[in-house]
Length: 384
Ligand code: PLP
Image (cartoon, rainbow, N blue to C red; front, side, top):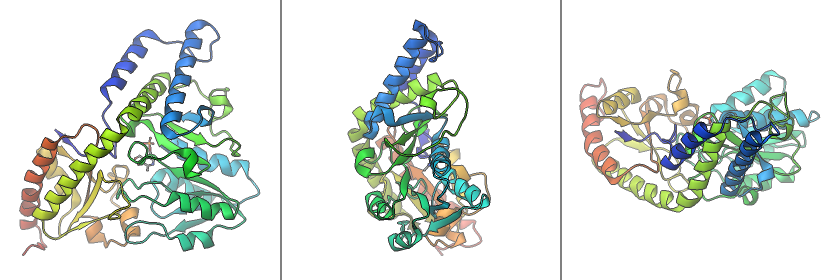
């Protein structure tokens, strides 16, 4: 199998699998219980918190575990707006993940004024538009760090400077940049950021929200006092332990991962561009996550390419995994100005820790043939 869909999810790192297996066998205590088997689990959760905090360049008191990256995004936005009821404006970008985009739509229904900052052809937000969109009524601006579909990285530090001048708060979705870009929460300058465990070789169904000390935020799930009153509900202990281990391993492997996947991505890109005519590369040419490749193969439906590759056990995605079941053209590809026929022909390949040179050899051998054959039977063959 050649797995090139690491932006959708990553396999568990073996060290994470070992730690989770051990934990599952040895520990069942409720971290809220005061006797030793509960206290031990609480301590392990705090170790996990420390590991996530370290990997993010944050203080452990600023990390709150959540049930997913999606929940962290929802909590950041709804929790801050709930804490600042006098401010009724929210600003975001046109290319956010549905976790933010759908929350913005919900806010509009609730009567908030929402501004969507457009992007240029490479997917970079329009900073002049942003400057005009943020007002003294704006409670929060939420703009993602790196895009999941095209890999473009936003100038978050500049965004923070612009927004702070108007006195608003900043949240950034770092689900796709965590583990791929060397950043520190404290140096980015944002007030809140979201991450997800299953994108960094940890288990699914667990994420974290960084809340800078002093940031106004209300609970999102109401109930017990878990997560220092911000997120009620008995903790997903096994998930959190796995996430903590994934963050610990990440701190060790970050540099090597980045160099290796960068080199593999360069080889894949070169192979595709040399061997396949009439294609378009999407995303910023430089300010991008190197391991995310997005190509439009003019004349073809992305699903046909995906299924043909799957018969060779090569797994990629069309646009974004989260929109795979919807017929709609990706809002990200539309926002960068792709015509629907280009957007529908777009395939995303995303590399990760466990990809090898052999994987790239296989794709560079198989993909050009598949494209050629599919184009031959397509109603519109741009190669003719
Ligand atoms: N934000 C971005 C940019 C993502 O790519 C994803 C997942 O694809 C999420 C948020 C949602 O994370 P989770 O799958 O943990 O809910």
